[in-house]
Length: 132
Image (cartoon, rainbow, N blue to C red; front, side, top):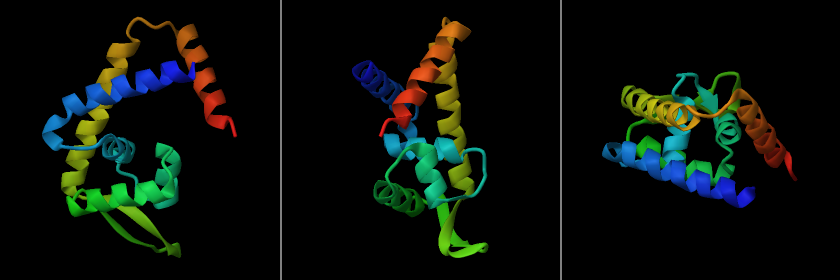
């Protein structure tokens, strides 16, 4: 099961990279932008949780996206020890493209999958995510 998920992940990333080639984004950058596409500002910790990315890895991804002008980081007014990540106008466009490509791929991939199969898949991925 784990190897099958690994293969599916690589196939998915390959398709997303091809669909978003004009943006020149890495898989990690696509993941972050697609998760930020709802426009909600998030702490670095929230993004790490949403994207299942280690905070140290996420910092370099956020650095690259910030250099490209896709996001900004500012102090959280509710907790001055942490930062909030916000998309810029260019970032909203890139995030929208990343989210759209992700949703389109999901719809195409799941077109022939039953609700029961999907529920089983969600149960398996949840169980694997919770393994310590």
